[in-house]
Length: 112
Length: 113
Image (cartoon, rainbow over the protein chains, first blue to last red):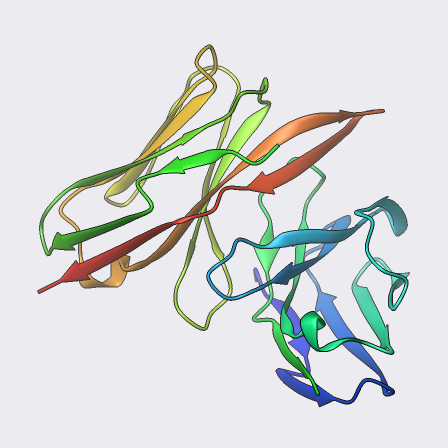
């Protein structure tokens, strides 16, 4: 099973809303990632969790807040987002930090 | 540092071959290849580690020249299902035992009947 599950698939939110994106994997992977992807661009790394600890924060604005409750779950809490934050948010996992990334289907976020 | 991919786009007829190149100015630990179809998530194709190995996946194979810091993806006898955007990702050592995967800008491959 190489599945990474993300919910919701689509999300529309206002600039004052608080919402969360969820990601789950059951492959026993110890590294999990959040990526942001704009149209016709490559995925951009936002956060990396390795063994449930945040190891890289790529200078992402504080309106994005990651959380890793356990080795199978990854959340991304959103608060006071801007319209330019509209994008596809991808979760991925890998066996370790140098192994293949397995991506979820993504959450398409629109900020109004 | 973002790897450089070429070409940016390519159009093939079914059955034709294509090569996509990926290069970096930094020493690489590994190179990843992913394919993303429109509206879908990237899908892992293969990973090549230091050592100049070549790997294969059905009619898709890749090579990694560690000295030149280059990788090439070879698609032979292309099928309609090969259409999509191909991304290379390069693993660079970022210090303290950490590696960071950075994606190139992608190569859009279109296979037509």
